[in-house]
Each structure stands twice: as structure tokens, then as C-alpha cells.
Length: 84
Image 1 (tube, rainbow, N blue to C red):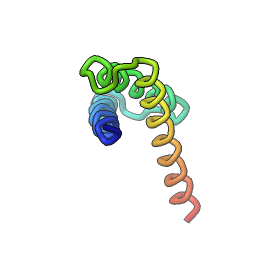
Image 2 (cartoon, helix red, strand yellow):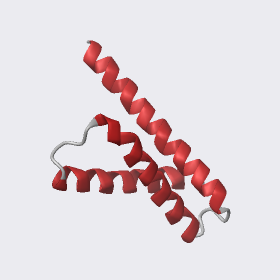
Image 3 (spheres, rainbow, N blue to C red):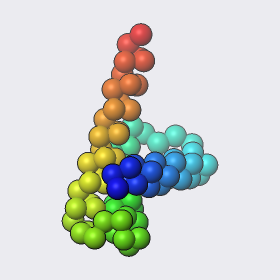
């Protein structure tokens, strides 16, 4: 069941990333956490309405934690690459 969350979040993140790359030239880094929260909310709604998670609060918490954690890991990788 947990892998389903990851797949849904990855698909929605990919779609949102593709949309922002097409329509917006460059997003300032200060708006990336807002994009991650939006991805988490959309992912939670998808998980809840498809019946993957019967509790909407738990769906929101799981998806928001996952997206914010993924954003933090991506930031750490970018910081490490810039230092080298």
C-alpha cells in the first residue's frame, strides 16, 4: 500500500514539473516548497478519492510528509553538487 503513495506522488510531481517547465521559464527556489505542498495536497486527494486511503487526514499527512521529504533530499543533493 505504501508503494502506491510513492507512485502517485511521483506521477503528479512529474506532471507538475513538466507543466512548470513548459509554461514558466524559471521558478525561483523560494517557490519550490509551495509547489511541493500543492503536489502533496493533490496526491492526498487522489489517494483518498481512489480509495487507496480511507482516512483523508492520514492521506494528507502521508503525502505532505513524503513530498516535503523528497524536496529536502533534492535540496541536499543540489547543495552537495554545488560544493564540489
